Image (cartoon, rainbow, N blue to C red; front, side):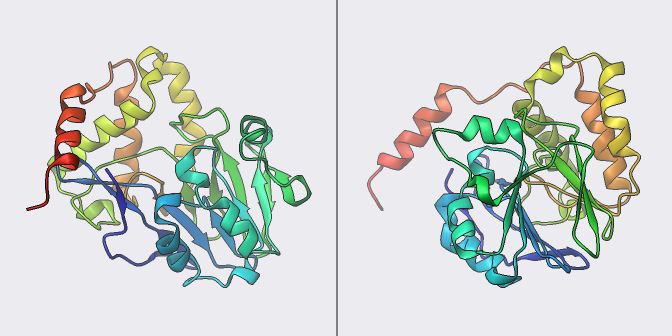
Length: 272
């Protein structure tokens, strides 16, 4: 399960907004994402910094969209490795950028990946970042696997960055949900979202609906996320509905040790 870019470039999802895609192979032959985002507006923003295993490809794609010296903000949704994998390189290459994080992220990373306090700004859920031509308002995404997680709503493009929410499998270098076959969408959405947030099994449906409602009510033109394709129109409504349907349900069974055995055998098999 080694990340691969599948020879795909940055994908424009709205005015001044690009998805920076990274795809990882899944044993079934499908792929899942570990994407990030670039907003090239009046004050350019890099949103999450991808996986270190594909550092050169990620940096090439990101800086094909924006010049490093023009980057003013680096927004990190949370502290998982696939969201901060190239943070050190980005901070070095973007000397004019301020890092946008929060208290739990800073605390959780201390002693391992210390964040530069002199370049740091904390943004909590409900607060907004003024970028001149737009504001980014921090939201708590419907689903999350870290207490530090925040997404945001862009007032200009009306794009929601949903962080780990709405993950799904795709058949290859596919960026838009409209291009995912229905059967793969059904199976992949249930599996990835229940695996990443197994706490859904124990959640009260009424309280969860109240948590999700403010984000679902935003005037969304598109939803981008780290682990799924871009959602538009009715796909957004469908993704929120599918998420609600997972509440109170046991997670989809995960692959067992037989998968690990098969992966080890494949890795150790002599080359043909």
